[in-house]
Length: 73
Image (cartoon, rainbow, N blue to C red; front, top):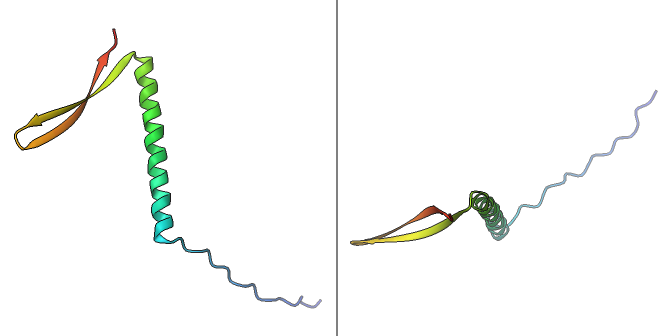
């Protein structure tokens, strides 16, 4: 029984993404995660009949923000 003639397989190298492609991919992923999170937050606020109120607090040499949740009724 003879062995079949084996031919070497050409090495395939996956293309390396450019820094711009990586940056675009990461930005798209971040945006998608932010949108999913906001959709879940909005759903919970509607179910609980609440409002989300962003508040900016101004004090000497600083500005800080917070979010207050208040019931609609």
